Image 1 (cartoon, rainbow, N blue to C red):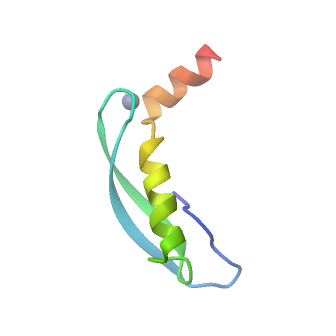
Image 2 (cartoon, rainbow, N blue to C red):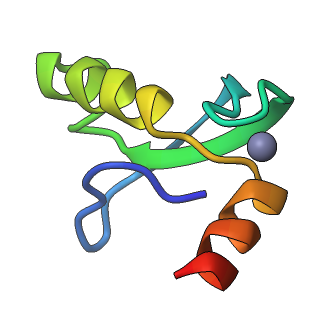
Length: 68
Ligand SMILES: [Zn+2]
C-alpha cells in the first residue's frame, strides 16, 4: 500500500504496520511503502495516526461501498 508522499525517482522505504479495522476490530498486517524524505517526519507520524483511526479492512470497505 502506498502511504504519504513518494516523489519521482525517490528511494522507497517499506515498512510494516499492524492495522486494526476501526469497524470490526480485525487485525490486518499492512505492508506499506513511502518516500525516503517523508519517512519518520512529524507529518509522517500525523498521517499515520489519521490513517490508523480511519482504517477499514477489505470486508468492511466493500460493505461500505455497497451501502452507499
Ligand atoms: Zn473490518
